[in-house]
Length: 107
Image 1 (cartoon, rainbow, N blue to C red):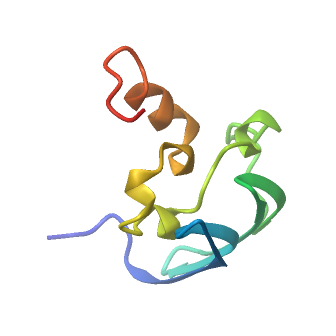
Image 2 (image 1 turned 180 degrees about the horizontal axis):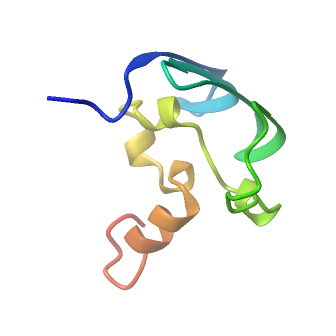
């Protein structure tokens, strides 16, 4: 079976614990494949991206990241935390809107 990506990756999330829940402050990822290498670093403050660095720079064919896209987010590793699933404010905006809609599944 052939996978979509053949290579290696490393991910890191750092932050604090506030009211017994994770609050990420930095996230880094490095993915190395036979086709390319990519690095991403995000600095977060209360769920808002304050600094975003990518290497290589995204191609012009991609949808640009707007200021609105940088608000109310968390990193992928923090979302894997067992406590994170209990906090709707840690979910990405699109998922939070879906889960907190008319059915009230998350809040």
